[in-house]
Image 1 (cartoon, rainbow, N blue to C red):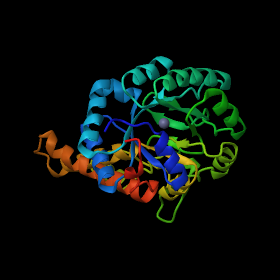
Image 2 (image 1 turned 180 degrees about the vertical axis):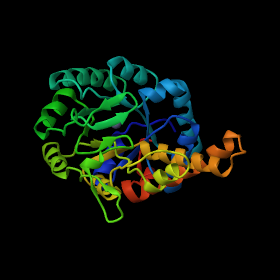
Image 3 (image 1 turned 180 degrees about the horizontal axis):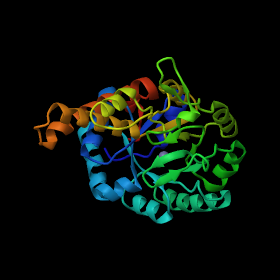
Image 4 (image 1 turned 120 degrees about the horizontal axis):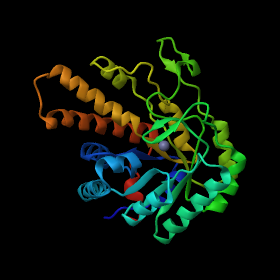
Length: 327
Ligand SMILES: [Zn+2]
């Protein structure tokens, strides 16, 4: 089996009321943890690589690691460029074997966003690759993408139809209140529950509904959709870390989004937290150990558990990998 595009995945997810998990990958252990989880629960997968991940691990290493995961698991996997910011970067990934790219020109004026997205779509479609575009601006930090709360804004639903028609993009990321990173909201934006934990403002499902009305049947993407599991924040803080008031998107809201037109949900920070928490705890408990395999093994196992939970309980995509015909 080779890499697949996300086209059929999204058609099935849209009609089936679930979303595909798009997990960011940077190294072998993360790829193994994610793909072993998906194999166990028969889930289709999108593995995505940011510009920063590509700079860190090298395009060829990441591509070959993902190909190794396909050979080992037999899963349908789409390899996607996350937040491509130039035509050249997208072209390089298309030429280099990716099956999906994102062109994120959402920080540019509307007409420029359309122009650049159209250029990437034309090239990608000539090569059988699909394109995700973005309208609206999420707050937060993800690798090279940094947007302050003041600069962030929700997607304007009245723009989506024209944008999709003029660009020909295959899916659209929108801003409805998700955010990049582990500090998605300031304490001032949140309320506190009886346990004193921060409760973020709810996602703007009214905006999502308006977008869906204007683009019936069209796959929608949510970025910045980690839930920042408090068990891992606690594990980090109890073992020498310092992550006060890290807060994410409640999983019930993501489940609700997955039932609608949202076909792809991006998760990165949760994997980082699981890996870092596990390694910190290991070092606290075993200050004498120095073999990377010994601390990467439990980190990989916890990534696997976390991803399995997401696939089954949050995204609802477990059991659907074998239904894909374009394997
Ligand atoms: Zn993103």
